[in-house]
Length: 251
Image (cartoon, rainbow, N blue to C red):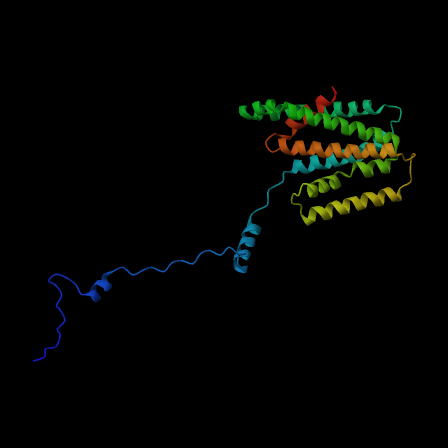
């Protein structure tokens, strides 16, 4: 007599395979890896909206007054210096630096007093950098005034105002980022200087030595600005400017 196979009954207290599979935890779906490509258009729009929504930094009113006074003083210095032909260039430079040091000394003293003790000690430790900046500033003024006395006013201003062009060229040589707006501003500024120089009448004989002295003044000023950028990240303006201008008088 044939017998049909009978499935074995599960052991007492046990569970069938189907029940065991049902009781096991189901695997959860894994999240997709983040894309390394550019963000989607919606993400970029959100980022741009957040950037636009940030409030712009408030510029105090006295900053505009200082900027206006600085632009007026710098733009009129060459004409005033050239009107004093009988005064030697180094004496003119000393007069200018002495007047500047006397004006900014009170602000420098107050700013230094407000510094934390650690920053005061840090300023003293960086005196050698301040002295290097003062030396470059002294050479800048000496070359500028000497070039002003040995070439035309327009040529002197053209070469002495080439500071943005030198900065842009140094940025390109060092392969540092420079924006299109900075390049455009540099080009427009130099174009304006060239147009002014070419359209003006020569008030004195143009000399190669005077032009090169004016260009050297711009180059020294670029290095001076680099030193100032390094120190001004933590040092107040007048604390930086007063020792630099005062030490120029001793050089």
